[in-house]
Image 1 (cartoon, helix red, strand yellow):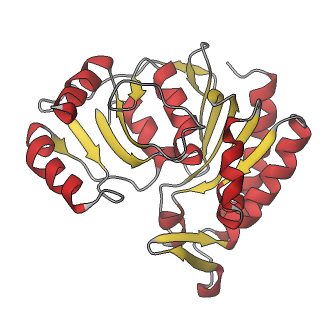
Image 2 (tube, one colour; image 1 turned 90 degrees about the vertical axis):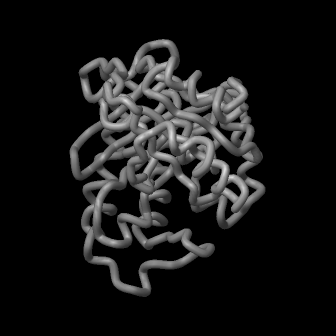
Length: 266
């Protein structure tokens, strides 16, 4: 189901991917890749993509605040606008680390939030030509097709656990108390790909430490609408305006989520 809003947002995302992102794929010069923080990259394509997406979204819904990943890096106070009455949230290229290395996966992600609650989300994978989208209470879709999350059916379940932003104590706890109960899968360093993996029978579970809105708002809504479960380890829902909170579990089914949460909270 592609409604009018999704049609407009998707047209914009596809245009930006075709005109800005993909022409830079595997053609970036060294000076076009910048390390914002250790291990955290930005490219000229990220910046140009966010600028064009911001311009387009402001025309689609002029009354909404716009919060983009790169704009927040330039002005950290902008993150406080994530709880506004209406807010566009932009990740101009999710998986920049992969994009800068000239390999997939990566994608463009947009969410629309109202008072800190995600109302709609869009994830466009320009290599696979896959649009994942959802509206709150209306189900999850890939293109025109409704999606119902499915597990891998493997025993033990397959888990992609990101240790990247955990401290040493957390990492050791994961390795000793959580990892032995699961078959561990490589993480894609790309939430735009990790969330689809959790619904499409590729992975069963993921643990995220850093939960910034541009990385997680679209995918968390999409997976929940597909019948999986995304929530904080204490069971509270993910909100875009809780930018300082860390830790989240994503699962292909509520039962798998409950099992992992119980182990984490033990």
